[in-house]
Amino acid sequence: MKKIISIVSVLALNGFIHQAVASNELCLASSNDCTFVLLSEKKSEAMTQIVNEALSEDVNTQNSVKVTQGSSYTEENEVLSLVNERRAKQRLSPFSTFKIANSLIALDSKQIASAQQVLTFDKEKYPEKKWWPSVWKLPEYDLSTAFKFSMVPIFRQVASNIGQDKMQTYVSKFNYGNQDISSGLDNFWLNGSMRISALEQVRFLQKMHGGQLGVSQHSIDTLKEVMLVEKKANYLLYAKTGAGKANSNDKSSKAMLGWYVGFVENDKGVHYFAFNFTRGSYAEMKADRIEIARNHLKKAGII
Image (cartoon, rainbow, N blue to C red):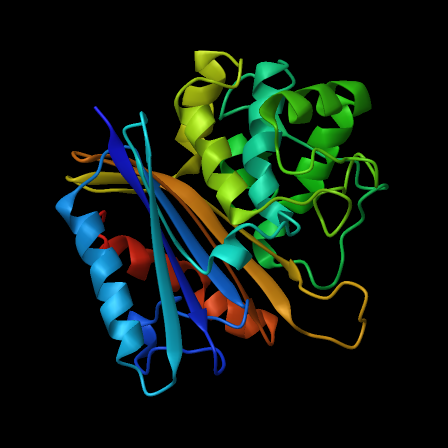
């Protein structure tokens, strides 16, 4: 049975639009500053409603906005919606969202056996920095806590332990972004050679969840264990944040790129999402990154 893949692209002619109430803020329009991609494996009335509401709200804003909508038909049982198609296809540094792939590779290659395995890093190679948050200074970490606190030195060590050849083999097999790890084995995802789009993020997560990456089920199950951030009676939310300088070539710029990617399992199916945006500072980005993504999921009736 054919399902419709609805692609919503909201293009702003007169600047970037924010909702007046921060708690309800959505990525509705852009000057290429944000995107939200949602891929649901089962179409629901809520998905259709959010598409229609997004179009309606955006047209009614005080700024002049042009909205375009296109549809295509496939044999797949899925619905794809996105805000700002151009940005959704733009490859950017994954930053700490690469910890999803990094963890999966480490698990499948037997570098890490379980979510509870104690992990360490070379403290001479990766010495403590003044800017490190307190959660990066705990006496001990396992995969769950290192993932939760986005402990960069540990994952740089994990990548080094995996090795160049094996890392490239997995990244290529995963078809992860541009598959380019040439800028350095322990930092290619940190404003290095690796680039991935929001659309590619959701397709990667979909393949992972569906067991289409050629990795063991144990690796997938363990990854899901560490990715789980919220468990409710009617849904499970799995996600990872990511952040870094938006303009790495401009040392004077404080603009930050923020990511929030993951998936939700509920009674309607599995819903993969990827949100990224640019804000003027780290504080501004961190304050809104998760909230905006959650607003989209709420409005779609997914959480």
